[in-house]
Image 1 (cartoon, rainbow, N blue to C red):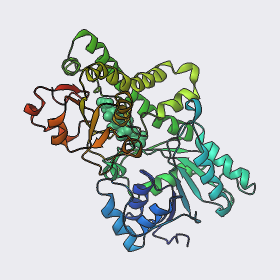
Image 2 (spheres, protein in one colour; image 1 turned 180 degrees about the vertical axis):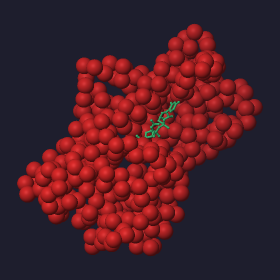
Image 3 (cartoon, rainbow, N blue to C red; image 1 turned 60 degrees about the vertical axis):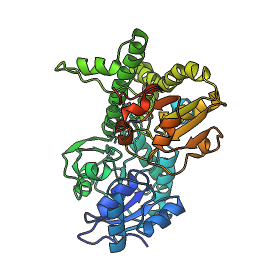
Image 4 (cartoon, rainbow, N blue to C red; image 1 turned 90 degrees about the horizontal axis):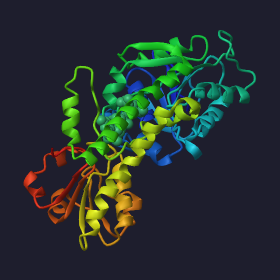
Length: 419
Ligand code: SAJ
């Protein structure tokens, strides 16, 4: 069944029910829209239709349960007709860090035959410059009867509205963040703004689609470059016997200095990915963005190279690796440097016993589960048994650890949690 619009409730199909699509669908449905969520994952669809959620995000479960039971949100594997489409599919990179737009292309091909004219199609996926045009071209190539020319019965309106919510705070930030709206044609921007205004109290910043695409990439590249500076400082300081955490704290007292925090590398699906889209779009003019990526990607090896000589000196070494998530207090292991470090240590040290501590998960990811020398272990048990304690994620549980348990241990604190 397609979502049925009423005068009060516009119909929306959200394509892709992942970390952005599902919360957006839920918040739209709870704010006055008639929403159908579409996903290729039949298990996720069944879970959502039962009023449950396929992944954890604070406050999302109650909203999903509510809107599903009221009938305002329904999930399906078949793309329906709707007045408005929001495309929130993955945009990974492929060979040579080139953006892979195949999910956007597939979404476009599925939407194209359903269109009647006058629909609004919003691309939300983080995208390289030109992706909204690519989506429009994909659809118009399949439907030569439709047009981008405004104000005809056959006009289809396109806009790019990048999401900028922080995992862990998505349900709050969806409502409060300012929102960039990039129009490709006609009244697309105004229509997209009206739709998002159902739930978003932030300021609406109107621009064209390309600038909107680039703005999102710029935000994440800004953060990546600044984290790379902190990570480079940590490697410089290590060789000079300087405590980088104290160094940054002191420098940040300057009124115009605000250095971010070093760590074992940069993870997640955004900051470690998006800057490559800028490099791919302008390879000759992005040495800084590229280098920042390389510095951050090299940090896990730096951590491993520091630890290996110490570990190989101890027979049957016991290593407690604290944290597998890509950042504190979440269960998300995507692109996590901690997870990569534990995997590589396990390979490099077959005789070691590696106790991975991750309070937010119940089972190890498959590639670690398959390793005989890695086990998911409780915090205190692991720290007590360890010769080496390697802190990789600044989860609250770890920062509260009784410092006396660390006496007599070799400690590598990649997050500066224990001073
Ligand atoms: N990190 C550091 N040092 C720091 C800050 C972060 O090493 O000082 C690391 C984290 O440990 C983590 C990675 O960077 O591994 C990314 O974490 P994050 O919390 O900075 O960002 P994400 O990836 O969870 O979310 C980002 C956000 N973008 C910005 O803050 C500019 C979010 O607003 C975006 O919506 C999201 O990317 C996205 O979807 O693009």
